[in-house]
Amino acid sequence: MRLQNKVAVVTGASSGIGKAIAEMFVAEGAKVVFSDINAYPGKLPANAVFLKADTSKDKDVKKLVDLAVKKFGGLDIMVNNAGVGLTGEIVGMPDKVWEKVLAINLNGVFYGVRAAATYMKNKKIKGSIINMASILGQVGFKSAAAYCSAKGGVNQLTRTAALELAAAGIRVNSIAPGFIETGMTKGIKNDKAANAGINAATPLGHMGEPNDIAYAAVYLAADEAKFVTGSVLYVDGGWTAQ
Image 1 (cartoon, one colour):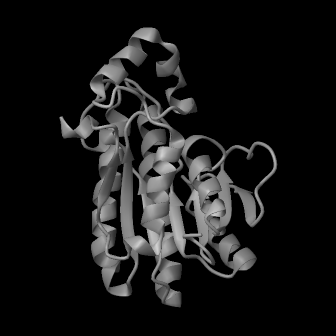
Image 2 (spheres, rainbow, N blue to C red; image 1 turned 45 degrees about the vertical axis):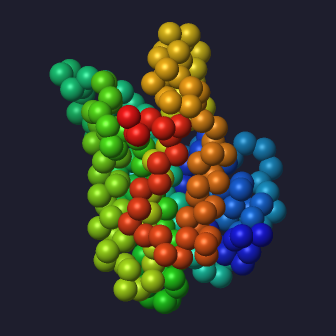
């Protein structure tokens, strides 16, 4: 059990990548606060608790850290995964689309980093903060200006936080998935032409699975990654190698 006696918070944990990460953390021995704007489907695993939270609100994110401390006695790992994938071209994009994507995908990550880092520094915990980025934080993609901007910001926030928190022994890294089979990419998967296009653009020839990202998160959360900070771990089937 690579995360035995660790306490973690995972946002966006009711589906897709976040659900896979949270469940794998539990399987690896962690006690986990699952969080999402939507209810968790089915019965929670043992050593887990759920709290509904909107990560675009700082007060909600603080409540997640407070719950981890109250329920499990501390916080060692923070996974800022919650996100939305709204699309739209720059010309004609409503302000509300831009603002919502940035509020959740970037502001929410900042709130998570700040809340976790504040607790960890005060308690002298050498913890791990993991932010969910994307290949679209590195490369452009039509009709995804808000998403690309937010994810690029996540990477820069990760690097800066890693430098600021290194002296406290707190590691900050991000994971940059390629196209993963989740509810967010269901439309692509169900569109024959779009699916073929994504597969053709991915050197390994297919989309990834949520567990591909969960394995990366376990590594960054575990002691094996004790010398890894400020990194962006690409799990993308080779997309960004091109």
